[in-house]
Length: 362
Image (cartoon, rainbow, N blue to C red; front, side, top):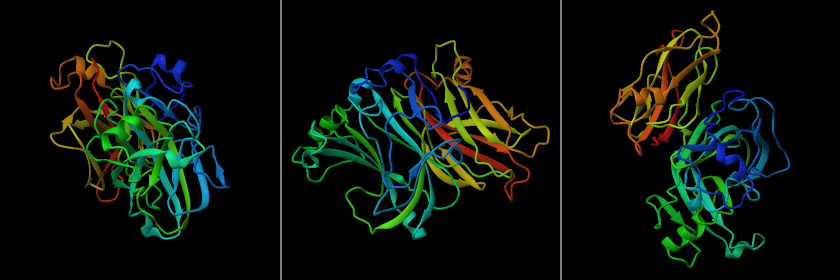
């Protein structure tokens, strides 16, 4: 890794497959992320005449931005075949993720609508929208408000299911049964869309300035990020990253990191069996009870103890393989985030990062 990027977990076999329309099955724990700094696959676009890729201001570094796009709902979508499209069932896709930020919206209350993930099959005729079929998941999490924060979203995609999974909806215009539509789409995804709202609703037209970073696709339980970190007293928004394969047997580390932490502060990684987003101590508690804490770490960085040069690093594989938590067996899902001291933070004296979702491999 050249620099910290949220959820950059890339298996060695993936590089040869990224241009294929139908990606072969990946190794357990793989995640591919396009971050607009070093990777650009997916042809992601907001549309509109004022789209750009600023070199800074993302989460972190470069990101995809569009200014004053006039639309009823921003739609961040792929354009053309890539690792994000193809036969999800064969590739064992398990989740999709994205980091989003709203810079300006005509009406601030417009952020009170959900973010949806839409997967489409174009029936082999990309120019004819009449025969498209789509399935969609309406997230319990709203789109980002104009609050200066990047928000992480992750949606599980149960590609191995042969029936429409719970929580997923089907194109209301299709003549296929829900199970037929699900199988048609998940075995041949031609496009992916992050849609600002329920895709079966219509909203008034407004002007939006929005940004996206770290578009992720996870295979067979690979790690993705979700939830929202709180801004710390040094003015930064800590971000979680992962590198490697979470495993009960692999000798190589699975390194979970948290960057942009206040320097020279203690902190730790904690996790639970499910996900949530509950306000707690000025931030969000993103993992559900019961929680398990790992050993205390020091963020290091500048001796001043007042800037954002601190970083936490935790080897989850080392933790698993010592038997400290016998519950962490192959197939177990884990949801975790970092807690750290922040003595200058107003009222709370602590900080919470965004969170990581993953499944333990053999």
